[in-house]
Length: 212
Length: 212
Image (cartoon, rainbow over all chains, first blue to last red; front, side, top):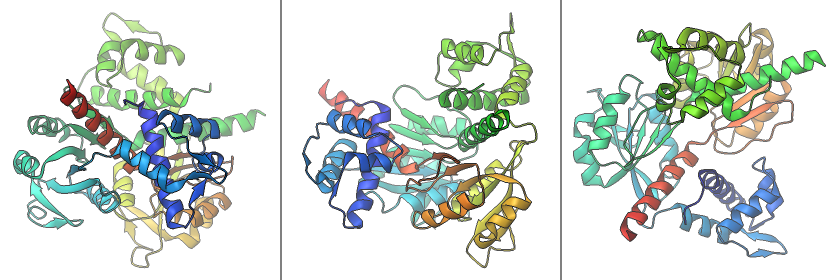
């Protein structure tokens, strides 16, 4: 089943919220509740869940645990996937700390840097290797996904190394778009774009207020 | 002129690329070149630029500087906007370092934390205040935008403080969605969702390969 990117994003967000529900002892949830928690509509939630074949709505709403299980079967690989983080500056550290232990099916197995002070030590709980060892470590640890937090100047060099090592998916936080071959699923995120978007809509609203 | 969110994101990305062009001495660019750098189509680029009224295509392509100026007039506020970062862990530090000096029209004026070791010191070059001083500092420094990097547990408390201080726009990197009133333009980003999305498409591709 190939689902649209936006649906996948929402399923991941629903699951995160459902985990919170469970840990707060909430066993059932209505579509409109789930929608409210995501600034979404109940219709959208029901459409997403229909798309993945979930229909067991009871009088008390959806069974939270059942829904988590179904979403997990869709999102996760059976044996999990292993992840490497490239660049252990503040952002690399934040991401490694943030992910580890959050999802049992996605494991950060190695981190990489060029700084001799970091190489050979644990960074945010994960062994840091020299970028020169990338291909070797990727094969040994069966790593399929790379997260790039390195500086824009380093990105083109890293792209070649990543491609050569047989990585299948890349999530990049560098501000330069990187061109990979079609063998790699690429997702880029730039914090400046998000901030500029917020700034634009704040400006537009204040102009609108003034003209009213 | 109220533009769609996706157009604003692309304009921000184009501008970033155009800045790179300029610093590499490239003065003109064709729509298909700009498209290639963003895994986009030339038609989309032309449509976006038409939407903002840019039509001065020469034989050598678009004038890079002219295009930067026009996009800047759309995205930026005349007098700029001031930004606060809440939470000075690794992510807060990464964001503050990353932004500062990159865009003259968006200035990180203050950072906030609860750690007494950080309060009263410069963090990534910006003064760090106690979260208790938030409203006072926001008014004094004319801050309109807040970036939240604090832990999910802290988010609901911060939401109240942010709302009360009169902040107009929020960019949140916490993994829990936050409900603000309609006075605040809210944009949330969760790294786990992006990573789960990459993992899903990597999995789908490998299953497809096996079944071929």
